[in-house]
Every structure is written in C-alpha cells, then in structure tokens.
Length: 101
Image (cartoon, rainbow, N blue to C red; front, top):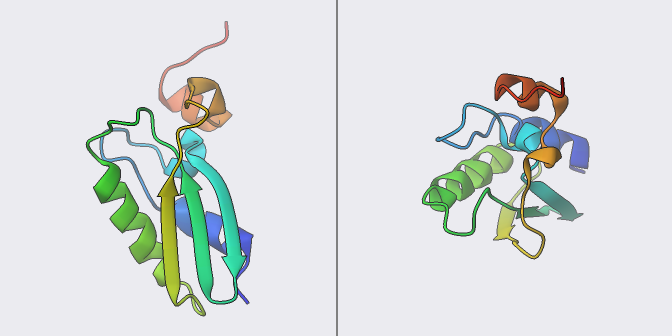
C-alpha cells in the first residue's frame, strides 16, 4: 500500500514554475488521504488566482501516478485559510531570502 511518506517524497519533485522551490517546502500541501489505490491531495497556492494552478495540478497528478500501486489521483485546491510565508520550511525561507535577524 502507498504511504503518505512516499507521496510527500514525490511531491518534493513538484515546483511552482514561478518560484524555484518545491511545493512541500513552500507549504502548499494541506492534506493527503490515501484510500486503497487512490490518493487525494489538498493543496493551496500563494493566491487563489494563481495562473499556474493547472500546471501544478498536472505535475502533481503525473508524479503521484508514477508511484507503484497508485491508480488515481484527485487534487483539490483549498483556500479556506490563506497561504502565508510562515508556512514555508526554514530551507525555503533561506532560499527566498527571508532572514529573521
């Protein structure tokens, strides 16, 4: 059976084309639910009107479908809680030039 860890590892290979940081480190992944051979992924973006949403969705679907045992991937974009830079990993914050000092 597919694990959440396997899905997260693959999602680290998915990038927002406008930002050279993967979607996991950006803090875009809001949830992963695995039901048998179907993976449901909830993502957010920097803004609901992000012009790259289709590109990111297609990349996520294609990469997760490459995991052995995955037959279907459902991607849902959620914006009930707006994304903020605080959701980025420390590594991503450094890459973006954010400095606490």
